[in-house]
Length: 126
Image 1 (cartoon, rainbow, N blue to C red):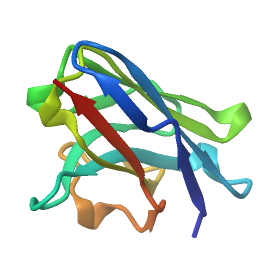
Image 2 (cartoon, rainbow, N blue to C red; image 1 turned 180 degrees about the vertical axis):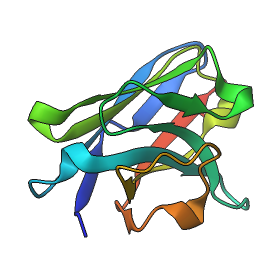
Image 3 (cartoon, rainbow, N blue to C red; image 1 turned 45 degrees about the vertical axis):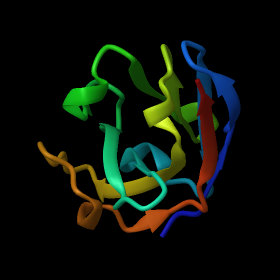
């Protein structure tokens, strides 16, 4: 398993931007599919975005396409989530997760990811 530590959350006004980072331990980071999920108060955790091991393939929740961008830097063992035009409904705890090794899942689900970070809180004020 890989250990993951998220950072970059905070309080932002609606319309603003934030970039979340997730640093992974170990030497196999570049082999993992990586994902971001979020959990809003009182709701189930939901898929946000995923990226394959090389960064060449990405997938997003339909409702977030065009506002959120996932990327990775394998040299830094880091995956990013750039969030723009933030809305109050984006308020949630955001989790980084490591998924399959060298195997892309077309519709990533929570069950596809075996390692999780502790989460970082994002609050978007109106």
